[in-house]
Amino acid sequence: MRGGWGVGVLVAILLPLALLFFSVLTLRFALFSIVLLVGVWTFVSAFAFAQERDRLYMVGWGVILALFSVVFVIRPQYAIALVLLGMVAMVVVYAAGKPKARSRATTPAQPATPSS
Image (cartoon, rainbow, N blue to C red; front, side, top):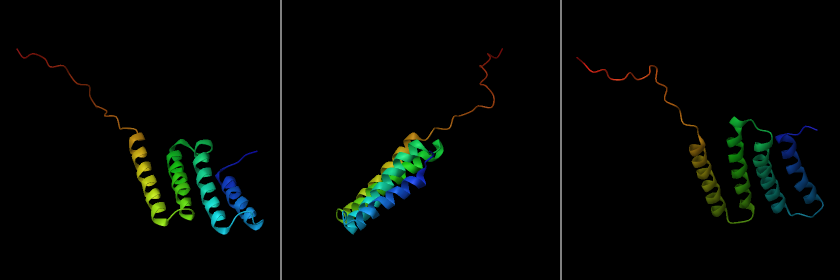
């Protein structure tokens, strides 16, 4: 069986909606669950399905979505602060993990010759 990001997102949306219609969750916690599960799935699928060049991007959005889900649980200004901190952390991680460009000399350095 082959899965991907879209299949996981579909499950992350439909499962809380089903629990909402069975009156297990309230609307607020169903929305919280959807955003949290999509964020966690994005984070997990970055390591399972994404190409290496897209991995950091997907991890970053997974963390931001998971942090954004707390807007349904805590005060909005705290949730916004957490999302901004998550974005800053992802920028720092990206900058620290970015490979440095190597300096390539076109001609090798010649040793100094004594002048006579």
